[in-house]
Image 1 (cartoon, helix red, strand yellow):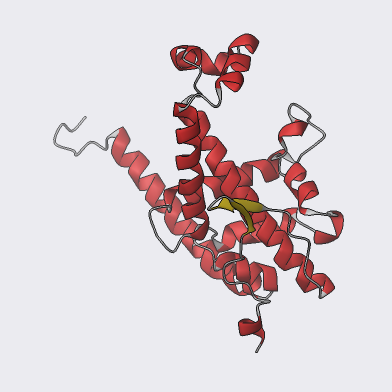
Image 2: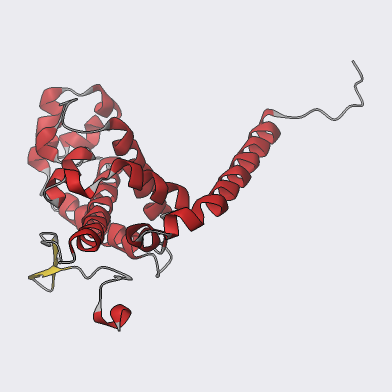
Length: 226
């Protein structure tokens, strides 16, 4: 073996593969952007930071608005209904994986002020962390300990303090941002199909009052129609 040859390290190989994959994804995104933009909801989706054309196209394959009577049924399909835990028939696992990717994107882009759903993620995470420090999740922590879920073996000290692990808090905040995004996706798709606004059950508390979140870049606002 020629000892003078430059050896490719494992790290170099991984970096090369990551760069190649990223380049391929960008190529695919460019190719399918016209297709995604040809629909109202697809065009709206890719206007949101964190939603790529590839993700928007995937959402279109999972969501036929005719199959969902309300946004709650869409959340269940995505595995985001906490009352449907451990039921393999209550959600689509591939759709759930896509929603996990969406939540990751929102978290990764959350420092950008223009990332609407990333900002929601940060706000909700801050709220949950405060509640956690105040011991408001002690009952949940106790239940996890009682169930002896192996996933939390490394977090027993935190749980014994009556607090949830930071990773769980983060995951909850990501799911929250995704649920808001899906409620907005549903509203845009519903109005495009039926020419009337959808019911908007999703609210957040602002200054002590429950308020409905406006849809960012809503194609059905008076400004966009005029």
